Length: 285
Image (cartoon, rainbow, N blue to C red; front, side, top):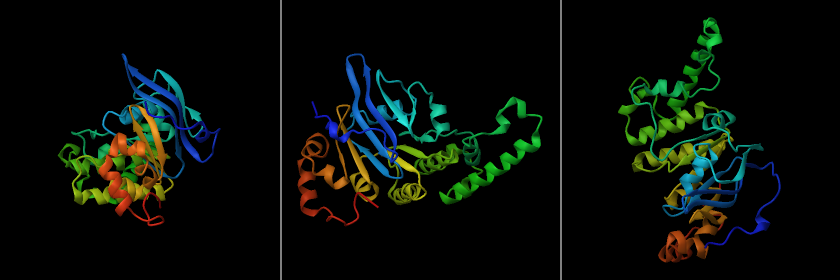
């Protein structure tokens, strides 16, 4: 079994850490899908979560965001324990996620998809129904913010079209823009580049970096190692449900455990021969 992260890597409460998980386990019958001894995502950084298919990355996402419940463990967002907190309340707390398979409301327009993600809408509350001036003002503000985000993600021209008419790459952009409508402090992206054509891939990369520049913490699952090298500040590697290594992109891709479990010997040799030099810009800002 892969070695666990040394206990020295684990410490007490750290204000620099926005998401912390300890001893989180999820089993399906006799199969252990997740057995994470320790995970810490630092505030204001881009953290990549990598590993082979079946390593437990998406399952861990589901556990941390309230879409599934673990069999054991504890985890906290910004110091607030999340055990038993449902997914919608996790999002309200400021930790928002996207999915590997995009989820849009196909029959609603792109703009309507954006507006429903805005937090604290008075129009959704029965007691506020008679006070139309208050909730209509909020709707106008939400619409203006949605249009600004759609413009930022180059989707403003699609705002009145059904979301189901968007291409796969455009749906990825919509999901990311919609996540920002919730005013998150942390965004979790599950394979944001899956199924995206090269023309949109660079655009998505830029948007992820801009999230960090705006002070939003990012945790993303990805298989594209070029992307991981280009934008990540920190990389966590999973295999067989466990975290087996972490560090900069260059450090983990030279770790023998990572090469053996995920990257393969040829990748490790090529990286040593042709990889970026220290300070050359990979794995950091």
